Image 1 (cartoon, rainbow, N blue to C red):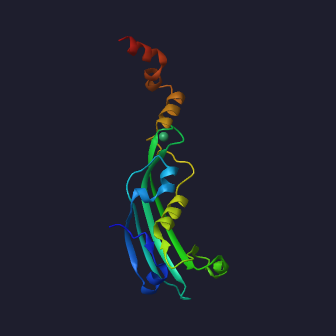
Image 2 (cartoon, rainbow, N blue to C red):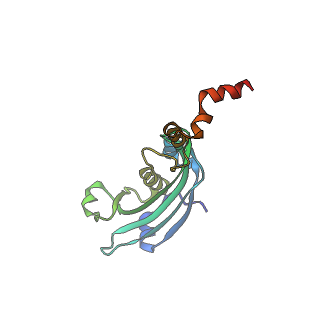
Image 3 (cartoon, rainbow, N blue to C red):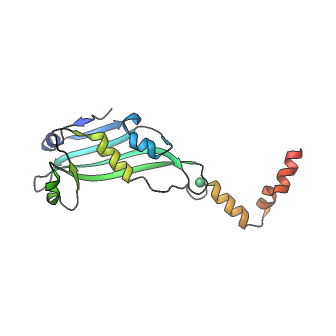
Length: 168
Ligand SMILES: [Zn+2]
């Protein structure tokens, strides 16, 4: 089920609502420009509520599979991005000092907030600056092993052998 884009976070917090669902790829423009490809919809669940001091908060999780570039072999690599977050809704930057240490401020100056933007912000924070294939699955690894080892692998990869194969 698709998550609503425009939400009233204060009302949701007072009602203690749980939102669960997906965000379409086309609603994640900043993520789209940061990776090669977004492999599927972003999935998220967000629990709204009040904390001990009756501050309006939201705690949630977002995850999405993306394809980016392995910085070792420069081939595409799929990465699962996962973000856990806890935010406190505030009306203005003057209220930043009211945000408890275990929450990030979520500045919502109007009645409505854009949920997609919040989820996209959180998932962008979870995107590593550099990405690699897991060890053993990267062609960059094979290259390094081939150079270092003196076994059959090097012989079969040698330019001489490649030439022989081309002649056949
Ligand atoms: Zn790689």
